[in-house]
Amino acid sequence: MKRLRGVLLSIILGLAATIPWIIIGYFGWVASIAGWLIGLAAYKGYTQETGFFDRTGKICVALVIISAIPLSELILTLIEFLKLGYPLAESIILTPIYVVNFIGDYLPSILLGYLMAALGTYKFFKGN
Image (cartoon, rainbow, N blue to C red):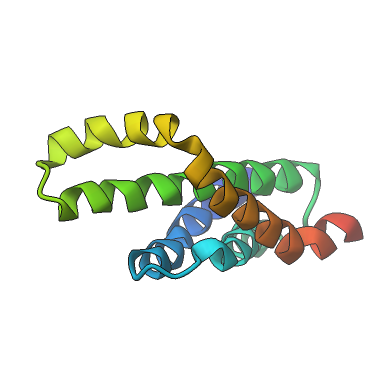
């Protein structure tokens, strides 16, 4: 039961840590540095609930990082469509299409986010 609560808290905190990425990116700055915060939040969420960092925690934190960073970029693109005056429903439909068509523009930010998340969580993965 502790592991399940740890996984859930890791997901919640990891996704909540995307908010700084979105805010930083909204103002046009390089938001990849916030990848560090996403990794750290996912790690803290798991260990806060379980008290340890085992294989389940490592898998959970890795999956949260892998999914939260592209999600942040998707939300930023959605916000850009809304700022351009598109209706919400149309923006939700257009966002994934736009990101897939212009993935080359998103890859540097996503990969830098992964790098920052890896740097932020490396000592935890290595230590166990």
